[in-house]
Length: 362
Image 1 (cartoon, rainbow, N blue to C red):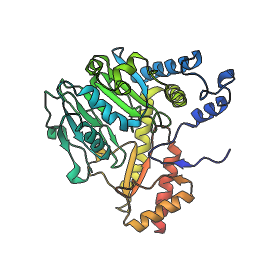
Image 2 (image 1 turned 45 degrees about the vertical axis):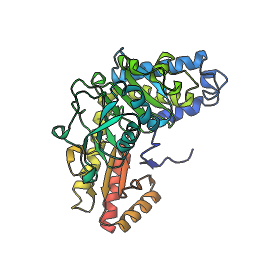
Image 3 (image 1 turned 135 degrees about the horizontal axis):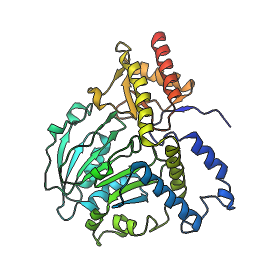
């Protein structure tokens, strides 16, 4: 096999090598079945075991209570920007949205098509360089739910604790940091996450929803857009992304074998500290884009160099050294190092060494 590079892509992103190798081993004939997971019936006995095991392992990792449904769906988080309000906003037809970046704005846009949306807080006037403080939230106690994005891949910010929203159900787009640490699922009404950052390949969305909220899903909804229908059919209303669910299941097993989410969080904190320390000790040559250090993301480290020409040179030279995906999002520029669960600590250490050399030479 060819040499692996250090993949800093924001998504689709790096997967555990152990998972890739196991999938490769079973690709042609899954566990001696004579067919690949990509070829087998989603209603057959073998796949039934795959999807049930994946759900069971996810429940173990996050300690998901029995009064929550776990769904493996499609459409990316983007489809769920619409599905969440369509299912959860009635009958009040109003919701609160905390706006902390581009993805939160896209979720807001779709929610406005369904009902009245109150922007509970936004830091857009500061170019999303920090998160709103709890004291800044202007919440409606009669809202159907409060929506927030836990981690912002573009701007490099991340909520370390959930916003406090009283008795209103909390809804979270956790696409880019789900499973990076243990969370208290009981604090949430619904969590949704595109798989392609910390769970598995693109094409799968994990939805964790409190069962009583499914009663809000109206029978008048288009069938596929109805969470209740998917829950009643155990994610098998139609053909699900079978191979993606299989890979996600392998990732869940990998996380359990690594010691679970407390161990993963410890590793993520350690990796991020190595990179942020290098930025902070560079006498301003590298400058983090997040203005409040407590808001810095453990998943997506964003920073700038003294000018755009140097940034371009940095990305080009890094790629030649085997560091890929470091160019910042096209909307903001700069540098972005995405260091999700599967990204190795050695890769962060090697990047820091490259950064120190680049600074000396430029």
